[in-house]
Length: 310
Image (cartoon, helix red, strand yellow):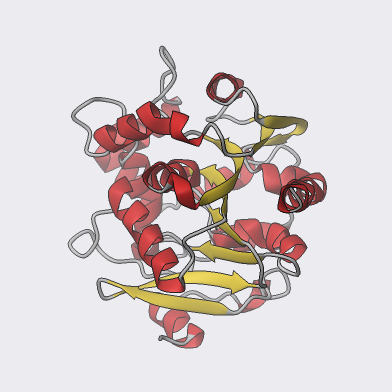
């Protein structure tokens, strides 16, 4: 077990300035020799929160604070993100399957194999639903926020910003690794209301140098569009098997001003899960928890508490 100060020093990450926003105890598990960071707060039924790109466990800070007195909140940082290790591509392949395997390793290590609530945002949706389709018997509830767990809706192109990073490697490498364009750009594009200086600092804190930004680039490059893309088959498998989760209570919370996961994606979720409870937020963007967290936290708590009494 590696201490937080040692790991942060190794990655040259300083989170002291944002500790007042992120007052949690860090934990680490070794996965193939790499340090995988996670939070584990509270007790009760497990609520596993999975972030996307370019966020990290910091994104869920207010939801953790709102839930952990009554629930066990488990919040990993995907490899290359947050306070987890930032390995080079010769140590870690940054593919969807590896991320699902990491999640399974963590939960098995913790003995968390039943009554799981998954809270999913952005890439966390694909990672979490791949795990859920593999282990539907372990899943008790699903909370979905501006994400996808299926191939791009028919006729829906990737936004041009993502296409440039994904398809033009010299541009993507320089823009994302050199100038941190993805994480910094999201600070201004992903929130509809705007973010405070402290929150901006927190969201980008782990991505403070070229080496530490590798995952923000590789997530984009792993978006499956064509059948020959490395992660296409796994996404197609999840897409084809989402019906296994139709019996699971689902709450969908959606920011209406999302520049990637727009209302077409929400319509797809509606068709796939017609019994889901859905709330949309006209004053929220992709970072829906940042824009509407004051309303979302009690809604999620209500959803979990109501189901616990059934």
